[in-house]
Image 1 (cartoon, rainbow, N blue to C red):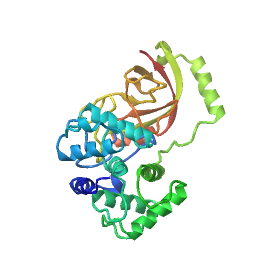
Image 2: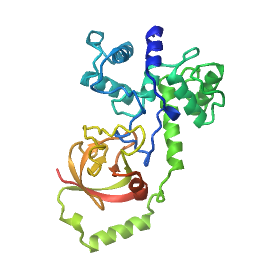
Image 3: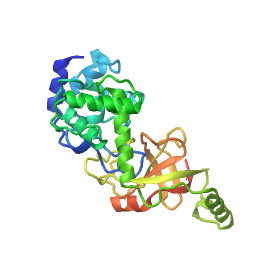
Length: 307
């Protein structure tokens, strides 16, 4: 690892955010429109020395070709980031905030800067760290990382790399979700499902008029209206500029990305987003506001893939 390059990158990533870029979540699906950081988020379209150093880090890990290091954050860089995130169980969005950058950089004793501070804040949120959040990877920070690694049953070395970042961020997301859990959080029981099916069979609805493959899915909701959210979906839809746009986050292996779907109680929407925890028959509905997302909660709904 090029220590000098890492140091410069840490210093330039001035990310004044709490808990390493935690954003308000309304479901465990963590859809793409939720960003990792508040300011200075590295993303497609940017250029400069920060991007060049990011590309160098990716090249060191075998995700980027050295000859293609240009300092331009183009599609090739974005794809490399997504591949790194996917293979290391991080939020796959092609954006580079504290979670992804920390994992790529690998933090250890004597490192310092905003990424270390973000790590300390996250460890503190999980009750592993009770020292000063000062951005210095000191003995206390290492001991906190060791404690977390031991509990998560991953490599115990006191170094915060991809595996450690994946474990602690997934844990903090889960913790935050439990803290803002919507009113309806339980899975419907068998009798409720049967009752719902009986009503569907006996009472024709608007969905009955739709054509295409129909699935029963677990639906939650999210919004781009939160501090630090980029608002950009996996297919490039800017939800901050289109607050009323009906978009759902899907598992592309179940519902094709870009397809048009009809969602019971929501209407016709675009499968235009994805999320790190959306697997199988789960969807995440975009809502214009935080209140609407919370009010929706968690529901079992029928969806029809129209095209």
